[in-house]
Length: 191
Image (cartoon, rainbow, N blue to C red; front, side):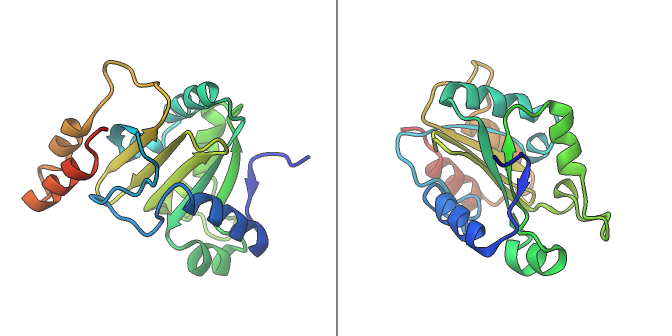
């Protein structure tokens, strides 16, 4: 039995996980494009920094409880898993996490850096992240550049106070072009 968190170290395991991830999202996407491959999805938006906070882990646990998942894959897509993480640190920047982790354990994990490079924690370097459970019933996509975190789900879990596409448009308005905002609205309209 593998103890979690489990960092992806071997190329075979990485390729298996990459194939799994690519069945849910297009890892080369960038907002305002919709990276999610599923249909009938509901979306919730929030700040990217929220996805990299201890408080966020409660949302992962809630989603996992509804989807009956016990672990999630956390994949750092940028910096590049192979060219940056594997070359410099011997692992891919992808980790399987137990949903039984506490908020503090999640916070400690994303703050943990390789011993030889204190600045290279997930919190410090992740420009684009994805979290996916084995059931594939929900997925989290986050990008530092846009400042957005998007949760796509096939299960009803959003509260009445959840942040929808209009919130995301307002969040991006100070820096985004009109074209970007229109694409964002178009690509994330709910089914």
